[in-house]
Length: 143
Image 1 (cartoon, rainbow, N blue to C red):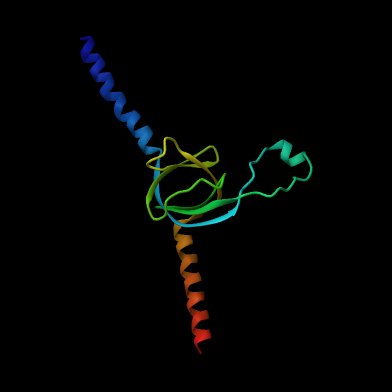
Image 2 (cartoon, rainbow, N blue to C red):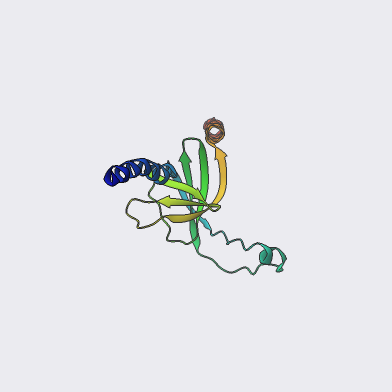
């Protein structure tokens, strides 16, 4: 009887655990990368009332455009060595105001700051508008 109870308990809890681990990750593709300024960490009260921030020379940090099914994220690495492969499907999740990215060969998630988020349909509309503007400019130069 004890083994039947343990087996039933195990079968009931495993799907829930697997769903919690797998379901928390979303999938997307990195379509753009460039090096930009590193975002400084927010320190709440001390940063707001501590006076002017001291500017120091910083390394350039990678900035990525990550396209998921519904949302497009602009994310910034915290250091210059946080690199993600382009045009590959990656797993990510939102966690504590950051975006954690799981790269296949990494032992743990890489944390990125979220610079911007936009609904994918709006982002695609903006991309089409930019393409139209570029084509129009090329036609004007050709004349």
